[in-house]
Image (cartoon, rainbow, N blue to C red; front, side, top):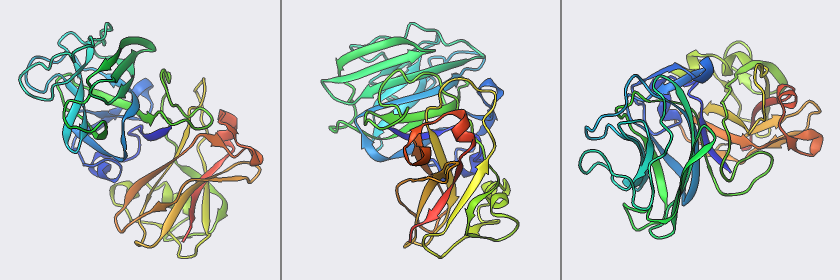
Amino acid sequence: MMIFMDGFDYLPVTKFAEKWDNNPGASVVTGVYSKGKAYALTANLNKTLAANQTTFFMSFHLHLGGSYPNTSLFNSYLLFFTDGGTAQLTLCMDTSGHLYFSDKSGSGQQPSVMPGTSASSYVCPLNSWTWVEFKIVINNTTGAVSLYTNATQTINATNVNTRNGTTNNQITAFNFVAGGGGFQIDSFHMWNATSSTGNDPSSLPYGEHVIDTETATSNGSPIQWTPSTGTNASVVSNATNLTTPGTSSNSSATPGQSDSFNCAALSGWAGTIGIVAVNTIDQTTATNVLKHQVTDAGSSVLSGPNITQNSSYLNHQTFFPQNPGGGTPTNWTPTNRNNSQFGYNLVS
């Protein structure tokens, strides 16, 4: 089941803390396939998980600069997987462009390959993108790691110690590290082994996916919240709200009221839609509850779980593995996605 994703397309780095733990003060650059944006990993980027994870999966596009990491401390690190701030294991890259997992987290110079595993046989090319996806099971005796690069499995190890920091078989957070490879990250996904519906993943390989981020183009139906200026659609697509949240807003104090929006159509892509994520940047009182929803062309509605907010502006994200399908949910296609509306409802 998908638990977090980011295509780095809409939030400025000064506002990453609305979705991640920190504002890294780095930069965003042109994304994979010249689509949207990517995160230039020149400053660490941290994420605390909503729930602890023992078996989990990640995938992303990884771009290298003009040289591989050298042997200086921290240059080889790409990802830390932590429990309460202590690293259980790390994902690294050696001086020749091979990815590998390590049980070391900063003690010494080049972190060593985790016992019972090996480095990937694939050499990540310089000045190019590589699709990376992997599975980790946190356990001190029955741990496991598996890694795919460009759809080919290049690391697979079971019954290894992946719990090298604490006595808990879990992680509570992960951290992208500003190492020495001039790394850029795009199309980041994280999911767990919980089965869901549609194409919501729960295993490997997931296959290469690109996150296509689209904002509202016009009001749909219903439109029941009150805009502070212009139309409801112009408020939620106003780029100024991303740098200065609250510059304009849609508001409601009436439980049951909803807004729905048409979004730009998907175009130029082939393949299968993995999942649809609805994102809002919202602020409520401590007693208000919000939820995201999807409405199909026949006015059937699917609603996400309740989102309880506080007084800070935060990015909330809800995953919809399927389209409402006229009352019988069906897998997403470009057509039913383009004919759907996306919005939110005030629960209380």
